[in-house]
Amino acid sequence: MASTTRSLVLVLDDHPDVAATLAELCRSLGHAALAVDQPGDIRALLARHAPAALIIDVMMPDQDGYEALKEIAAVSPDLPVLLVSGYGETWLEVGLTLGRAHGLSALQAAAKPLRSETLRNFLATLPPPR
Image 1 (cartoon, rainbow, N blue to C red):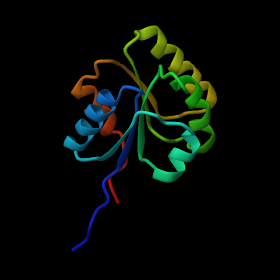
Image 2: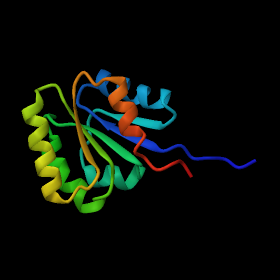
Image 3: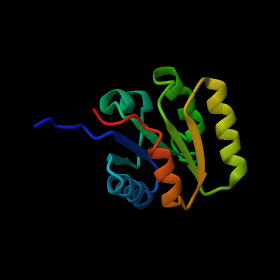
Image 4: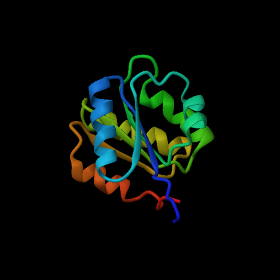
């Protein structure tokens, strides 16, 4: 019997309950998910977990999503990234502009609270599990 590896979605949000909830929603939609509320070194995190996608909060205290976009683009420019923010559309538009300027090719944005349909649509863009 052939096994399949579910696509890992890495969820970065400085609010542990938000990160855990988003990760659980990803799992309910058939993906493996890891919630991280203190991302630290984003490059090391990406290398360690090799996610199929990333959901990242735009505003985090130690390394906000804007700072992380440059790091993500340097190591995984094709990684599907969903920027999320509870601070409004302007912050998301800035994130989209910066991410694209850094070379991220699969970047989307969504306001918090994140709707399950939005998450479902984002996850539908991922390649099928291997």
